Image (cartoon, rainbow, N blue to C red; front, side):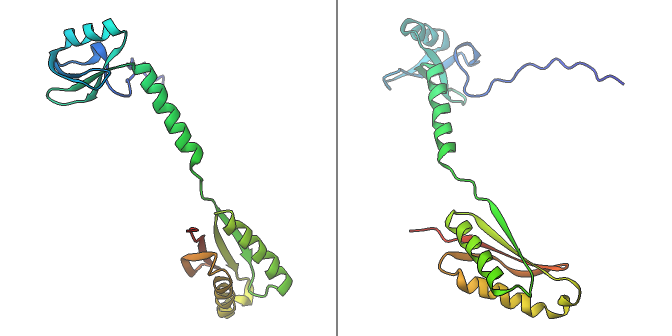
Length: 180
């Protein structure tokens, strides 16, 4: 069955400008920041047209506050500012290290080097201890190993989620300590 066509009008995002402002009177501020006061909207758009700028609604309300400015330029600068903020932020990933309770010493050291590398890069680390077969009867071995990891990384990381059993595996999450 075909869906009916919907005629949707595109919704404008951002502040209202010029003719989109529906109030007949506005409180007007010039491009220099001088407060003119209550003005008819037609007079405000006339003043803005003389200068070659737009009337932009800064604060909506019963009597909206409007400012004479270049709306396109303000929108562009806001986009640039948002892009710069996105560029600076770092996404924290969760890296997973899987172990077994009977892990050999050298294998353990290799895993710990990876954990330290992840923590210094600023990522969280999820340590997963898998139990197979009869290893389930010796869960204290896995707990001891995770406590050993916690002790070795205490200056680099803090425990975000303490070791807990989930089915046949025990998990612990550690997060890097913020450098001061």
